[in-house]
Image (tube, rainbow, N blue to C red; front, side, top):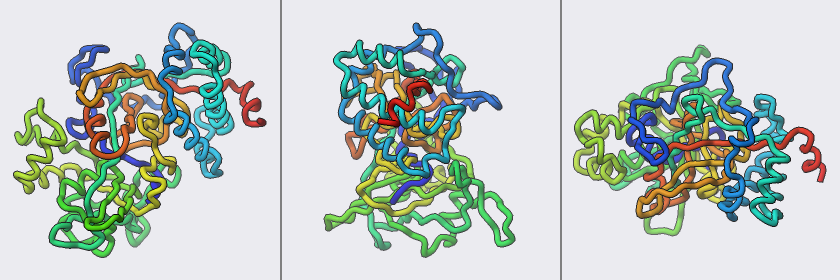
Length: 411
């Protein structure tokens, strides 16, 4: 499967409690209701603000020290995307040209590989680059960073007594914007576009019969793939895997399952974890299924080459702790970003990071300048890291100053 528009993998912290839920961090203890991380921009407002005061720049030497081979791999994958003619349709973006963004990656790759010290790297970045900061959710740069990962599920390509919950191919009547991928609705026989059917209407009817792409063990597993947007499906009793990825979604609103379970009294607000949700779904699957229907949004899939799995919205593989998902309607695709926030380790201990990443993905719940999602990797260990990622921070974008662009493109 190749994803053409978005790859919304597991947004653990986000979908468990809803994207506006805020946990206390060491950066700025606040109450959860005080910030709306999904607050949209005002009409005509930009998500990025050029930094003109050198004292507001992040610690570039420290960021250099935290780069690794995964950073360089993610840069190469973005450059592969920029080499494709189709990438030009997304530029210019608010005055940033395609050549400028592409040359920025070439330059940063060279500097990361060739700089003799962290301080010399920082000096060259300040000389060559314009640095922008996200305005965040509050015009002060505050961004909530959650985590996502790529899961692995047992599955079957035919319905069996064990595997009876399908994922579906994209239907012909689903309409999305060809440039942004934004869902518009369902095209009717007379050519008009109306809202698509709800999740409950699709799942309780046979309107998608014959469009099944794969079958999973239970309703929660299928729901998780909808939230993920992607899955590696293991066929039991064989060495075969089927790679499933996002092919589109309906225009219906998204709602958090974890939040619905808290409101229904099935979960305590302080114990919302994926493991707890799975436990309750095993105990009372019908009750959880009904709450899933509150999320009217429905996702469709396609099968793709495992060599590019998991692929982000650029169609190139995302890279562990080096790929970021943002709202592509307000942020430029494929470019270099710097994430300044906190992450957790496997013991759930918080630790600061100041790390270069690539803006290579997006997600259904990742909207507005106050939200971003860090790709944590593949499988159960990555699930632990993604589940613990919920912290405020700052987000920066780097673009070569226009006078240096040809120096790198003409090499």
